Length: 117
Image (cartoon, rainbow, N blue to C red; front, side, top):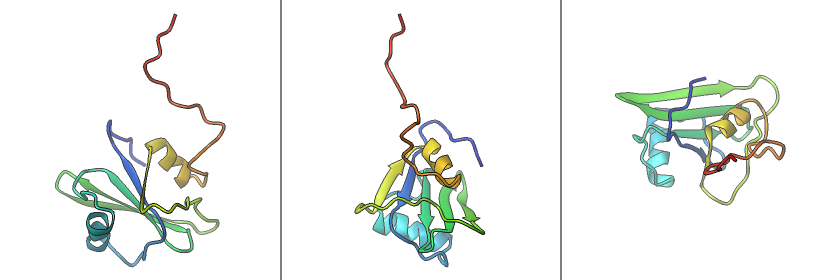
């Protein structure tokens, strides 16, 4: 996998997506259904009904890239939500790809603005 750039956002397209869709179809979903800019450089993650295929669409300088992962066994722990779009962090994406839930109760929470004494 790639190293996430600073400021990179990861969006899950909630529900299920027809995995026959390629770059054009997925970018139309990003634009028309999710109301996001497919040219933003952010990652848009899609999952199929059986939860064994993920596609990640993103814009890279001069063209779209699509990353595809199909599990031979098991299923992705795809979250359920009433929302059409859920933002997660790059770390949560890695958990998802590793077969884990995106919310890990035992994980350290990020801190900011702490003053050490």
